[in-house]
Length: 297
Ligand SMILES: [Zn+2]
Image (cartoon, rainbow, N blue to C red; front, side, top):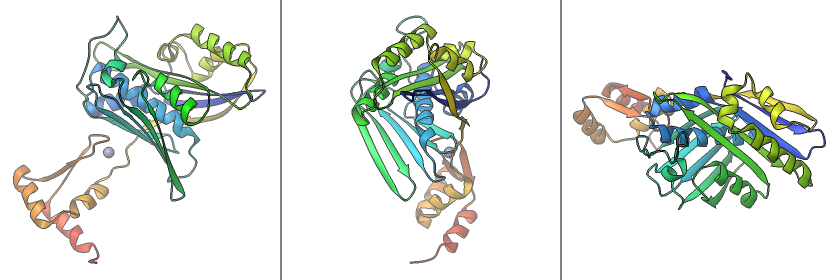
């Protein structure tokens, strides 16, 4: 069992393909715990968050961010994950309690919960410099296939994507991980076929994470017969950007009348972060003090 949440990248010695491997059991468990997700919702949320963290591994700047949004017509509603260049990610799902019976033993119906009609969208925000959005229609709602389609349609990169989350009987996360193989320009069909065979032999990535000691060990199985070298390693974590200060600023933007209404209803000023479900509460005096500090325009 791989205990640490991290990712590694590698290329073959002829630079025909690039491989990203991630183990995310701990951070998917945290996402499940924070959002109190059903088994199938955990799998859907975990796959989207794992995919976003792997995609975000190309970000460089401190302010850079990547958002992966999956919006299908299933009961899950929309699923959104946002990650930064330091390997921190956070994620939300509209209906965390929505669930479906398994289609077969041990196979959660993620595609059914997400739905087929809808889109997968990637927003890359490179600080102040630029941001761009790519969007493709969903293929199956299983996420991995949809992401492979995004790479081929939107970025013209033939890719093999595998994402997996194993959920235990008590709803805790047994293992989670992801694999992305991308063909570089000029990559031969031979190497791609070879890799596909290796991946098929290896089996689901969630099981590889469960049955291996390290991602390096999984990489050996993926690259079996192909000389390669590892190029990067980075830690991954579930970490939200919200803070008491940030949310107080949002509250201080409301009028005194609006604040008084919320206060009357709840007996306190409380805001919950959508991304991590952390609740922050303030006294009326704290918010009023902040309002007075803000420059009047
Ligand atoms: Zn938060």
